Figure 1 (tube, rainbow, N blue to C red):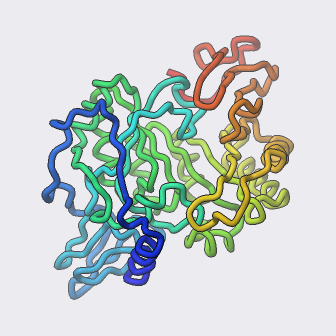
Figure 2: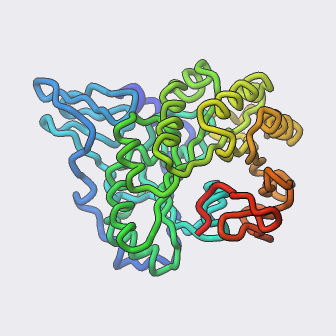
Length: 376
């Protein structure tokens, strides 16, 4: 843990970013709902066990960190204090925005609606291509934040007519207690909840979250364990296990595969992944092949060629997957939804906007085929 903190701080120091960390709050949010921080964000963590002599073992994610008194786990947002393990980011929000649900992206979940989208600091992996590194790879105390308890977050969603709360931007796994409580409270007020995650989580906490969430989007970074170890600092199998858990739970979920030139863009890898999806998750799980743009520690690479995305798209379709998309290329026909039975256009999109929707009561308007998703 100490080496990770040192690496981050050195990076922030030497790039000058350490003094430029900012957070953007929508002007719609009244300050009276964003209470001043004291200690309300410190809450005993779930999913850990005490070992001995004030040592605890976290059981939230596959790292299962052993943490001695006064230290934090790999994610830097959970701390052992005298043998009790605490989350330091309960309701400690560093971002609050209202986004179209298509931005997550979730294409088969309440299309055309908005999601009140929030994040705390922290992540349990270290992607070299992280787009939100200034909040995901920062310590909680390094980032401006506001405390928003679950009931107030739900109230904000209701007030601004957002049918959904989205836990996103960084990694909701590391603020799972807050996700669970917000989603539980939201159910009593007809506000739904979605989690945008890397899927690097143990089975029990994922099963518990499935009991309160309405949908999940998983970023499958690669289908190669070496990529996970070198580029993500994680491993592949736990993410695949999470996808199977979601399938077993009958929870709606979609997948994103960020196609990075030279690193995870080989046709063979995408073909193997598509076959695995078909065999283990079925043909109807939407997968989004999204365009990479140089970020964070991979600024030496070019943006993904559109042709490469189209090869990935065709590879997945040829493998038998029904709902394949190309993302981050506004106007591309592969951001639309087509009926797998009659091939008619069901949902026409332009970026995050819905231009046409021919799904009626969850069915294709033209041939009557059931289209999987959450439509109302």
